[in-house]
Image 1 (cartoon, rainbow, N blue to C red):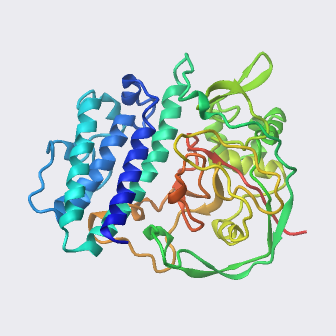
Image 2 (spheres, rainbow, N blue to C red):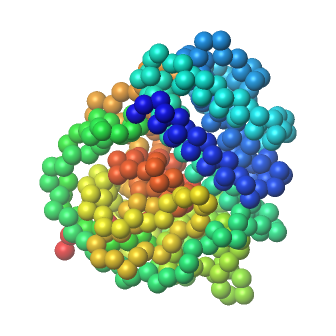
Image 3 (cartoon, rainbow, N blue to C red):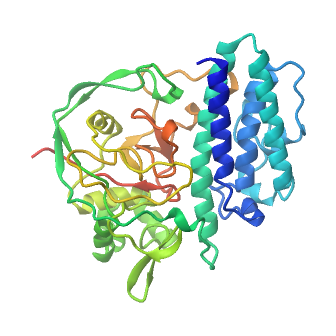
Length: 414
């Protein structure tokens, strides 16, 4: 990829991030409703800090930051480049202002353009720039999911945008699709961008298995709720049952019963539950309990990736404006393996055989999180189109619910 192509890609990604903020009032930028989410303003600044720290300072002679104090405020978890401001306290940062954060973004953008125009090491610059762009795309998704949580806690139930609801459709009946298994290759094969945790490509032995043809719907999950699924300890892992009891979970995040009918907070506001849309905002514990209730299980990430090669239809991903997950299309075969909801797998987030981190502080990007996390696959309605691929490994703690995380069932073959 030459420097002109890199610049075009850079400008496109940066503009999308700012377009996602267009529906917001200035007050929306500063809310942090729980420690796991970040204020919108912080996301905007952090992705600029990433380019500044890993691209501009090492590669652009004479580069000067707009404010050296931002190095601490907007460092997320990179110990190799210095201290960080406390993550749970990011909502305390009334300054810099939103206007100053946008000025910081413009300052970084100007410097990146200058770097691309004068670099004598295009390959070295390109590799870091490409990583930075995929990093910003990750934060585009986090920006959307964090905003949804931050808005949902407000009793006024403000919508992100009135156009965020998907058109209604009827989900097709779920089918079971059987796969032979055998020795299969898993992981990035090269030829395009991939994170270090997707490599190296390696062989895995799979037993025959079956997968549900689509993601589990709200209506199907509602049956579990109404069958007292959250009150039946025998369905739950020990840690899941403890979490349910301690946090009072009785349904997925954002669900609420009103006058005997289920509603849910969505990006379009508080609406009746869309029965044919994929269930979202469930934890690994809930996904596992639901699968057990159905007499099924969750797929391993290796089963998922092997099966995804046969996908025949793509689900909803992030375009110019985010919207909620959509019902599966009436298409034969495996659908929704890409988009709509991230799908929990039964696999712990661990390194592949021969895994190596990136050199320097960038080696902290993925590797140090390979403990106490579960893998999700497939992307969601908040994942940018250009960011997702079949080998992509997302990961979250098993109690996480604020992402667009859903369920696809796996079965032993008949």
